[in-house]
Length: 97
Image (cartoon, rainbow, N blue to C red):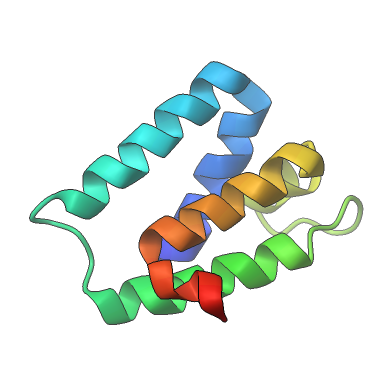
């Protein structure tokens, strides 16, 4: 699932620091402008789910995967805006919803 992968990449980038965050931003934009970019319907759905995840970040609990654990243990002050930025890159119309 696109949204799960992007959320995981964002969490790992936040853990890696500002340089990793910058590299992820560049990579996302690059992939979205390429020929192999997902269809807009898929991007719109993923953007909505990423925004929902950004609005509901959590810090403790049961983790079903390493991605969930990385998200939970990330600096949410950095992760939330990064997830929102990724969602808006996927689906620019999401910013108006």
